[in-house]
Image 1 (cartoon, rainbow, N blue to C red):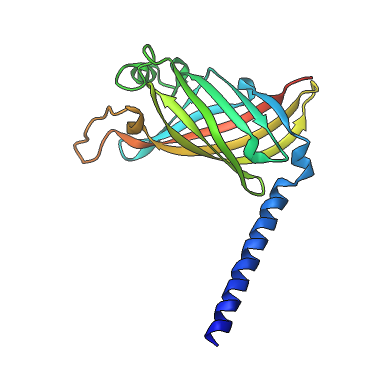
Image 2 (tube, helix red, strand yellow):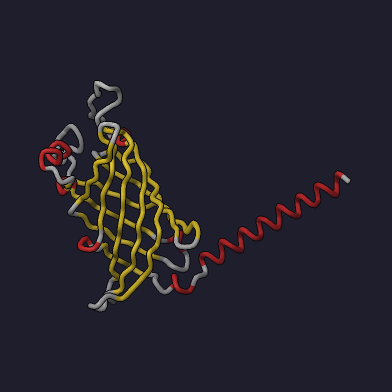
Length: 212
């Protein structure tokens, strides 16, 4: 009886593995995605790269970067071969308050004069399920490079009124700013600190296919 029981467990495990492999193959075999394979350039006029961070323990401050450039290489037949790169101008930070933006550009935070750019270079990509993807890479900020994983949702593809082929993604990632040397803070009289260490990065991307 015990041997039979172990055999059934082994068969179940084999069937589960086979099902998982079939599902993974089905994800990568979507002909609609295959048609999107190619090189794309991020369109800053229709994209947004920003962040939110907790302020004074009670609310979120939101900001964006106005100047950046990026490129995607999409492989719809085999998403793991897809790549992404992004270069962001730190001086273009905008939280809606000029004095705060000046402080963020200073050596207390980003030190934009010494480290003018934040960059991301992908090292791996995967299709998680349906329209959800995950891309992993190296984020360099203040001359510190550490791994970053971004969860993305594919919003679809379309041809705009000018004939440009576009794809859209929305995604987010969480980091600890102290990992990249952004450690400035101030203690609150009521306890806690002025600026949270945890920062949520936000990406809303429209990218245009390269014309042949």
